[in-house]
Image 1 (tube, rainbow, N blue to C red):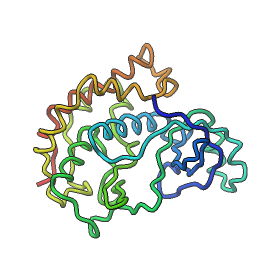
Image 2: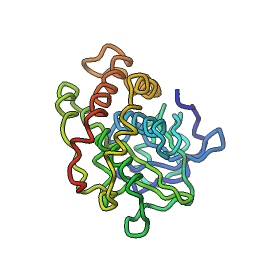
Image 3: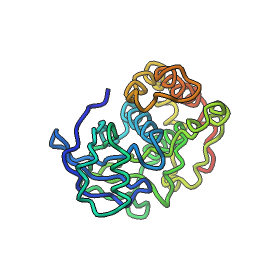
Image 4: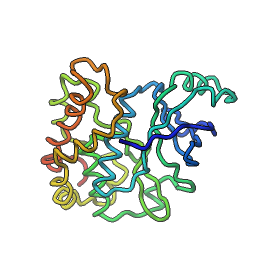
Length: 251
């Protein structure tokens, strides 16, 4: 399970993200970017962050450490903005936090270079999870201490929003023509040969076990959280073997 911490101070909202995350301090003396469970995208966004973030980390990508954050809405009573107050009131309980990478710079393809090998690994991973939010307009990549870090995976795995059609949705190709790393000649074939064999049933079971039960309970069509965890794993296992052949727009 993810490490559990308790929010002790709400520092400020972070207005760069569409979901309006916040910056908080916690009882382990850490500073985290908090993704609110009460945001418009709902708990499925948090599930996507956990599945993709933990899978990426296990495959060797740099991605901020994830924790669950227990939030008492009263810690933000001094926040003057109405929208933030509403988010805090709607988000009592278990939320998602990720390490705040202080001093990190947003990735700019005109300012930084990426090798074809690294670009290929990231494009392959984004194709696996169907990440539609890594475009040149909004890369969701950070440069920190000279390394490239992956962030913000809430817009992935769109099949989770329509489980009856998940198999069909997950079988579709991935359009990488707008991907932030498409200009760097991503070597997807080499990445697939390295990474695809590592995406196993056991690995995905380990990853999905990190999702808190309360974010999975009550999903129509599923008996219990473990049943839903298996549903999250199945499309990823199927895509891993073939998605490199279905990536469009990198030539």
